[in-house]
Image (cartoon, rainbow, N blue to C red; front, side):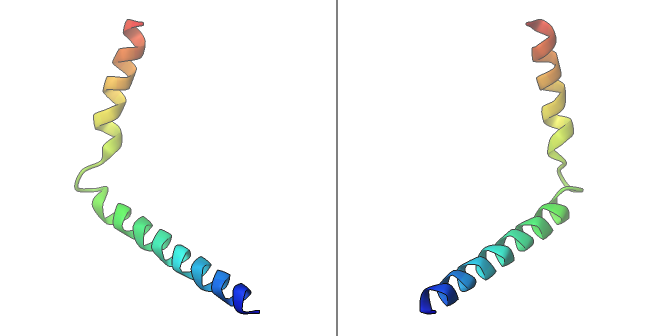
Length: 49
């Protein structure tokens, strides 16, 4: 039983970390969206090949 409880605690912590990271990304996105800056370079490199 002790090990199961330990796993539950780890899973809870992981879930909390993931949700907090997601919230952080959503807050950060409007300031500096990563897609527009990386997409053009990727498409241009494909065209040159």
